[in-house]
Image (cartoon, helix red, strand yellow):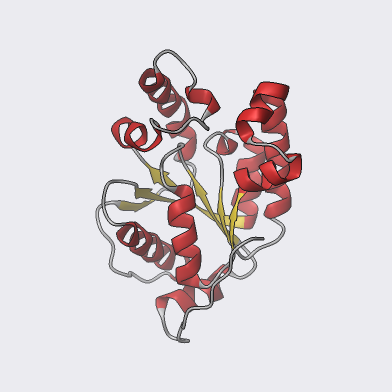
Length: 207
């Protein structure tokens, strides 16, 4: 576990009601690279007074090397197997907000564990949003191709049908981060507490 904060949360606030209903479970953010899982995850964790954990950072710490180095030295299959083990361990240490890598939710065993141990939020982003956010970064092994935009499009087509298994969908788009966090809180409150908390058309429950 990495980061914790202690905001003032009153016993009758939506945040307190979410925490009470969440119990020992985690909130797990899934979605494509560049969807904002780490950025939104940190802010959501701060809002709820929970620890924030980034699965990719935990993998890098465990291997004492970066994810691109792991891909280069051992290959994607090795990385994915390790990712399953790391997420399984993290899911036993809730409550927390956990940001996962873009491909992690594709593994059935991980989806099953997330379903059992967490409430999942898919941050849904389109190709244009993703490319604007990741095109200047060299730490995305899957984008080291001749046509990164085409690669992103292919990955979205492969992954979105699986991401739809998440409990909640929130649109990741170019608006202030706090607006996305507010939509996550609203969706969590509605799902966990069974009462409407103001939402927008950018939020939906998917399961």
